[in-house]
Length: 218
Image 1: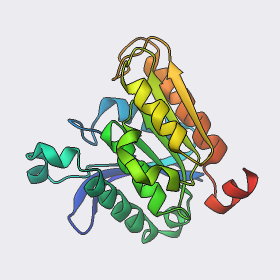
Image 2: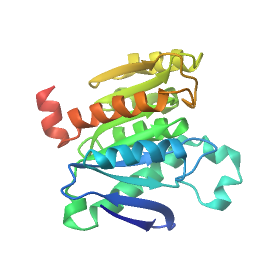
Image 3: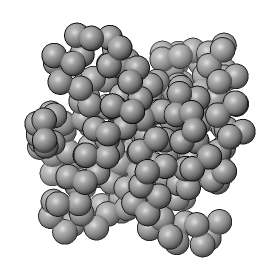
Image 4: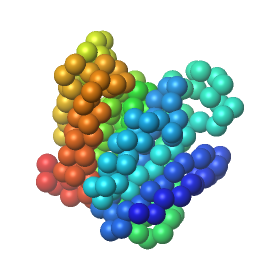
């Protein structure tokens, strides 16, 4: 496993890149409002994915100055642009990284950014997973997503379940909704994050391959 800090241009956004030997794919994380690349929940998911042979990029999508303006946290277009820049940056890295199929993992508002980015990169993004996300905020991008998409929601995250169901109905790609019984928005309940990890890992193991081959298989 090789892990190191990175700075993603053009703003030098800080991140952490972890690449296991013979990586089978790379998953970029988009955290939600009030969180950062050090989110213990996203870190737990990333570490589990590393153990299963996936490279991960945990990235701050806003500068410290931008984070002071709370409206930026909900600016899905801005967050998606930063995620697109990160995918572009990955393509300029070593061949071992640049050639990996890319998946996106989004939490809260980061889920909408991930779906928006996936809609704009149908030939690059191969799979998307949302955890406790607001995919509905992706709006008109939802029907344009081609990457297989999994929405994971807590069974006690009332209100958010309905928003995920509405977003699921607008998606036209291979899609699924996984509800973790008894879990609330941040999945703090015993076993809840373990369930998230199993759902996410299974989805990426199934779909994280070249986007063209995913569509052909579907």
